[in-house]
Image 1 (cartoon, rainbow, N blue to C red):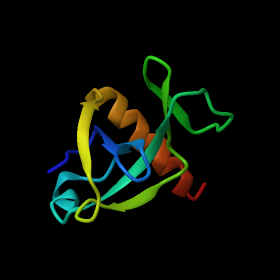
Image 2: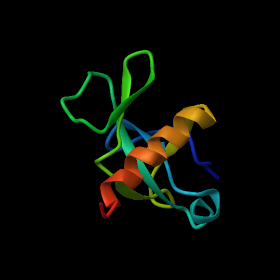
Image 3: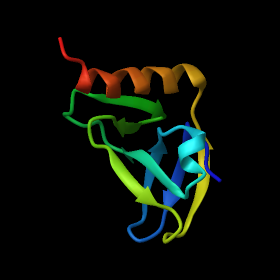
Amino acid sequence: MVKQGDIIKLSDPNCLALVISKDSYNETGHVIACPVIKNKPDATLSLEIKDGSYALCDNLRRLDLNTRSYHVAYNISMSKMIYVADMVQSIFDYF
């Protein structure tokens, strides 16, 4: 099972994603994730997570890991995960 803060490498399409959903949700085999890209994006809600890799925090995706091949590539620190969660939550703030 993947954990919150894991960077997973998916096949088909071949890409990276940062798992942001809680572990209790991830137990279902589904996750909420942000795409991870290599080039610095123009997006305002992005965060450099490792040596030129950026999580697109405003591009959330629900992934069914029961139907995909993947492996955990690495994970991010708790402090970066908190920052990502704050960025995502800011999308839904009322004021």
